[in-house]
Image 1 (cartoon, helix red, strand yellow):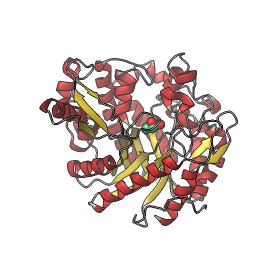
Image 2 (spheres, helix red, strand yellow):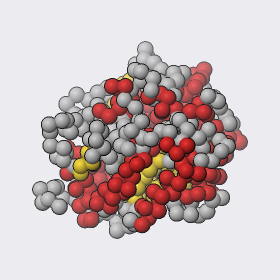
Image 3 (cartoon, helix red, strand yellow):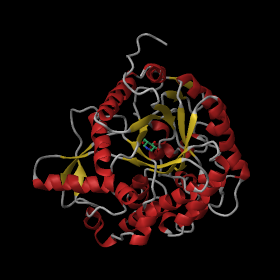
Length: 448
Ligand code: IFM
């Protein structure tokens, strides 16, 4: 461990869960290996123009073949937990019906290897890669998808729940609804408020159905991972404050209110207008299953300004000139993590929380540069851990932190151009190199 690394953030409890996170499509590659069915991401990324550089996840980090090496890297980092996602179409190539034993074998062996290295597996069931066969049946627009998802959850649980104690149903359902069904930036590339609403409702129903299905598979901790982003008004004007209230309901409350409180935020009707379709009471009751934790994915804050002419909503975000931004164009705003954790704690009661994602894409890994030097990432991580600690000191029941991400990987519509990893990946050769942030994170885990 080199001594020039900044010190760890001290004060976390000894049982705090230190982890790293990834997702299937972003790292695995091998889209058709061992009987896997294609997913909407295989289809979407093969359509020219959808992804920067026309990249796709066919190889990605080649994790499907190099996973032992990746577990060894985790071991080197000293992490105690690994959050990964299961590719639905490896388990059920057609999305429902026939279970593909070889697809499950992959995760089965991964879990065994993790446990043998003393790393607890945290499995996410859905990180955006719906089986393509189900898209042909309407995907998230089809009410039946709650049943499809429960069937998949049950199949995964049957095989893995004896060893996987922590399960996350959906990752960032807001992104799926907004970016995948309203703005068309992500798979399946739909662009309609009606579709976005249906996708939101049916994901909520799928979450409830999967929780109910998994509860029967054995004792386990079940949760959901949501992206939360503080929405601050650009000014004190009533119009901007109202815009920030609407944006907050849209981004932060749209999924948590139904899941934890069994109701929709009042603002939804105003936001969706004629496309507004609430779930009925029976559906809301099924969505509001008791869960054991909420996962918070935190990256940035947004500053919101009223704009009556803007579509699809009457507000827009305003870039904060002079403030630091990441390679994604996201404002670096560590205090927002304390704010949002405290907000969840206040708003929804004492539900245990995990930070299921936090990390940063930087441009300092360009060819010719020092692959291993990423001081800005270390600073970002330190500042956000300080913020997490501040929330805990203020009474938030925060149980763990999963750094996004273990590896540089396929960053969706941006292809391989945005590097979030604490491990550098040379995508031509697959070679992995630890960045300074990886060495620092090891120190953090040891001393923090
Ligand atoms: O890479 C993504 C991840 O898949 C979901 N949360 C945000 C990350 C960074 O954009």
